Every structure is written in C-alpha cells, then in structure tokens.
Image (tube, rainbow, N blue to C red):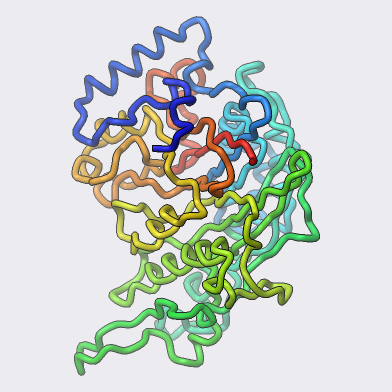
Length: 429
C-alpha cells in the first residue's frame, strides 16, 4: 500500500477490503449510513473536497459521447444534450484540474470546444450543487477510428466496413479523445503516435491462428497488410502541461477492446501492444528506442520526467477477456506509482445487486470503473490514472455513488456513461 494512503479521507477508502461476496445488506447499510451522516450536506458523500494546497487533481473519464453519424454530436451539443449535461455535472462535482475525455467524437475539434464552453463552464440545473469547471486550455487531434484503410482487415471480401478502418469506427473521429486543462498546454512539445506502424514494435503480438485444414499456424494478416497496419486504434498522445514551473506529461490513449474478433485474437493482441507502447514510452531506456512519433521524432519520454498515464485501457489486470499481462506489466513498472488503487462504494453495491458474472470474478469489486454486461464480462477495472513514481498521491477515488447517495442529486447521473470517472490528487515533486 502506498505510504500516502493514510491521508485519504475515510469516505474515499470505504470498500477497500470488500469482496464480491459481500451481502447486499452490507452494501446498502453503508449507503444508508452515509446518506444519514451527510444529511446536512448532500454533496459531502458524493463530491470530494478540493485538493490540498499545492496539489492538483487529475482525472480520466470515458464519457460515451459518441454518435452514429459524423457531426451529430456537435449538433446535439448545440441543441442542448441531456447526456452531456449529466456528464458535465459529474465533471463539475469532481472538479479536476486536468481531465482526459475518451469517446468524444472529434468533429474537427468543435465538439470538444462546445462541451467545455457550454457544459463544463456553465452552472448546472442544480445551481450550487455542481461547480463550473473552467478549463483554460484544450488539446484534441484526429484519431484512427473510422479512417478507412482501403484494406480488407476483417477478411470478409470487402474494404468498406467499420472494421476496415485503421481503428474501428463508422466515420473519421468517432470515439475521439480530448485533454482539458486549467493550466497551459505546451502545444509545441506535444507528441502523437497516431500513425505508428504496428510492425515497428519489436516482438509485436502479430495475430495468428491455426488453419483447420492443415493444423498449421498462420498469420491472420498478409505480410503486405501487416506492414501497413497502425498500432493505435485511436491515438497515443504525450501532452506536456505547464504547472507552476513544472512540466507534467499527460500520456493519453484508448486501446481497442480485446473482444469482437475470432480465434486469431487480433483485438486482444492489439490491446496488449497498445498498452505495451505506454510501458515502453515511459521506460526511458532502449526498450522505447524504436518509437517514432508523427513528426518523425524518435525515442521514448526523457528519463526523470513527471508523467501521468490516463485513459480507458480496456484491460482489467485480473478479470475480463484481455491479455492481462500487458496492463499488469504497466501497473508494476518501477517508474509508475501504482500502489494506491482508487475505489468506490457504488461499485461494491453494484456488484452485489447486479450479481451474475460479478459474483465469480477474482478482482475486488470496489476497484471497478466500468459497468458492463452482467452475464459477461461483468463490471471491470479498465480506466486508469497512473502517475510517475516522482509524484506523490494524496487522495483518489472513482465516481460511483451508491443508489442512496444519488437520491440527493440526480439518480440518472450514472446512466450518462457505462464508465465512471477516476481521479487522483497529486503533489508534483
């Protein structure tokens, strides 16, 4: 356990020893107890107190603000979108200084702007309940989702499917990413790896399968296709942020889900290697020397840099269908401060009330961040805020209130996304 965990308020440590076998009475008892204890301040058990002096709050949130048509999200946001209003309320309640938003359609960058100016920065319908979150700087850029490759990547004889894009998507920019910041972004120093070729990663997990007719193992993609494939399903970004004379590198990504494929496990292999890129990038040694960003700059992050890895990595270190060793290696990397794991009461309660696959999983329910199909895979820990070892963790949590807690604000908040915001308060050393 991280040495700083003892400084975290008890409200944000509840559920630490809870398991998936906890009875519903236990979970509901805590929800009722918290509701009564905070009757005079309905936000005290939902919104954490501001960061300690000198600390900053970092968060990641898969907002599920994706639409089926290009430009539809932007039109929805301009018209007044109820889902976006709930997303904004959650962001305002946690009030991060730096936020990575996953699954915000790109829309040439306009959706990110409107979301900030018309939702995050506006007082919500609950008045003082949710404080405006005024981000002064934003970074977003094109991603691989929906960008057609011109290749038959799913081997069905067509080249025009959503599955034939460099990243799965119905149109370019679907499931995009945005970094929001209360501090200036060093834009000229941003590095992106959208076009990095998968085959350029040494010992990459190239998808393969066993040919039923010959029992021989074969590569799923031809050599010609393999040499053209991009590794990142969206993009990998290094966004340096200037904070009181110090630089914090926000390393953002959203690897593909390790499902929706066949025995070749092409999405599982890609998810693993997308996460491996993060590990190689922060290592600061020869393991990342192969990396070349979209501007032709080579090599990994400079040794000694402060960083925080953010994103929906779509891989649980214990449960789910991914190649978990990839995220385990990242969590256990000596340059990552991964000893403290953000948790929530609501995830414990949800595991009990939803049951099914949640009751047989091995991981602690309190650590879950995604509320998924209860038959398979169940709820998982897939969203991460992972600071460098030279950052001190002061507090943290997952925004997943219990049903009793939500009654004091908006019971529908958790319907806004199937993911939950994860946050940490950090002291930059």
